[in-house]
Length: 201
Image (cartoon, rainbow, N blue to C red):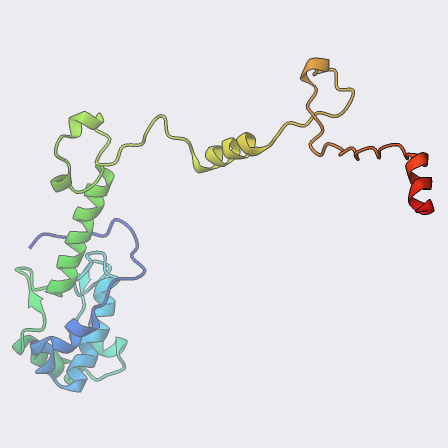
């Protein structure tokens, strides 16, 4: 059994409730044994070797476990035998109790973390040399950052309207009034002779 050492603190872990309920070995145990196993899992998760029933690198005795769980030494020994007989936990060559699932999950987590540092899953990297060893998704050198794209878009959509008298523009470059004034059509001159003829009729 490989020794899985703790490189950093893991404050949480995934817990699959269906796996807990569907574990036939665990379901074969009493309520007391299942409760004790949950307490043991909490200790294993905090161990230096994640998944091993140890505190500060040393195996936890039945007497210690009884003190940690507010139980009796005799009761804890009986429940440990029940858990072992039902195959809930395993014991390595050094006599240390460990959770197979927790050790396996820790090893898979370390493998995934190592792949992430190298750029991703090696199964997805067909020819890393084409990317200059930068992994599956190398950054695009010519790609703008989101904030730069926003600035360019604002600059492109903002019209330049100079104020009258700006020296930057000459007379030929002065922009037209965005709202030109409309000129009313002039009325034709009044024909006085026709007006008098209209009223005399």
